[in-house]
Image (cartoon, rainbow over the protein chains, first blue to last red):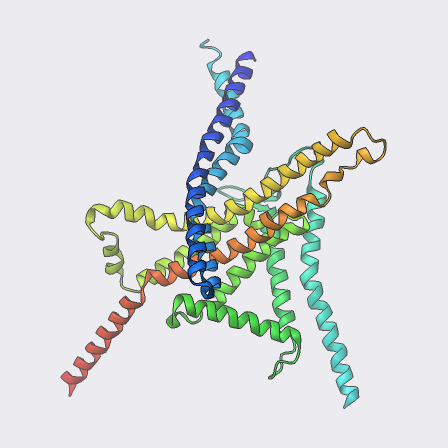
Length: 102
Length: 306
């Protein structure tokens, strides 16, 4: 029983660490979208009459650049809210199976 | 004359009422189902779609989940909306609803002809359907329903549809050309091309699902956090303390971004990517070249005959 508790604690901690590492993926889209918006601001400043076109293209590009960040976010959310539920059953059965050996 | 017109008006209004009922009733039914099926539990609920029914089936049980039922409701609502807008069309637009319907159709045709070119006429129905379904699905979480687009199975289904369309467009250039497309620019790139072929639907599905789902999760976490905060700050007041006052109104401000803006945005982007991918699968130049070859062959055949 103690073994299960210890293993579950380690598993939960590692899930949290994994989620934190997965969210590093947010850095890239942040920088990229910032550059895209900066370029769009420049373009609007240079050519104010093309504002609507530039804005719609920028939003489109931002949403596509956001994808990698969203992947990281999905993995983080799954690791925190879904993975513990899946892994705890696996852990318990593994510990049960290993009990005779220990 | 006036008697006849009044009779028609009464019938017209009755049909209108039926159509409005068709718009509203499915969503109400979904809310009722959700209220009936939600288990009594406290705390943050981020469990995804509920499963209403499991039908036994040879390989694995067929699951009727919340996202499926909600999509059906959204489809019925959209059908009701379309019928309501196009009910009683006249040759010259007189009513506001006809103007709205014409505006929607014109916008969709303009969008498709701008992004896909003239030879893809007929795709505006598909694009409009995708846009309307996606937008309404994402917006359905505003009335407390589980947004069907927050389930990866729904968006993956749409992405598979788009993948089939893309492959169909690629096959339009001939099967051998399709196979040859994998070995470009050099044969070494074949595995990479193969992966990129399948990454298109996967990325489309995950982009849409991830945005909507993360918005829902953040909203749920925010609601729970505000409830805890109000209990902490106002809990000592006798009667008012039992009401989570901070939960009123504040989540709605965030939901403007996470639910409304993000949902409409993703609907637009999904439709846009569908158009770009489908029209990019068989580009205009290749099509023109092919048409030229065809005309030359025809001319030669005509010359040989003559």
